[in-house]
Image 1 (spheres, rainbow, N blue to C red):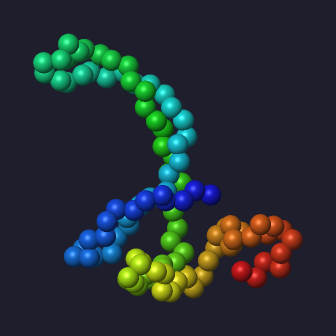
Image 2: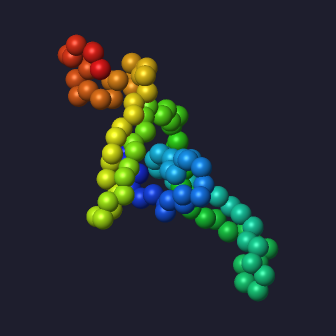
Length: 104
């Protein structure tokens, strides 16, 4: 289970939108590319660079959290869950789904 470590500052003039997307680093490889930096010794030459491969599994929205501003910062006011959650989603909330009564 990953978690989003930081979010961008909220702009209240914009409508609600995604502020982050969960991904994980799957590995690294290298690429060969032409450098386009006029004035550099490497201009119009090929260089090998390391790159990260990022994997983004499908995301499903299962709820929203409403926040209220307090003198000490934001506080969670309420959570709204989706009416119908898939079994695949419910399994994530249990440590031992196979032993439970599966009534999530």
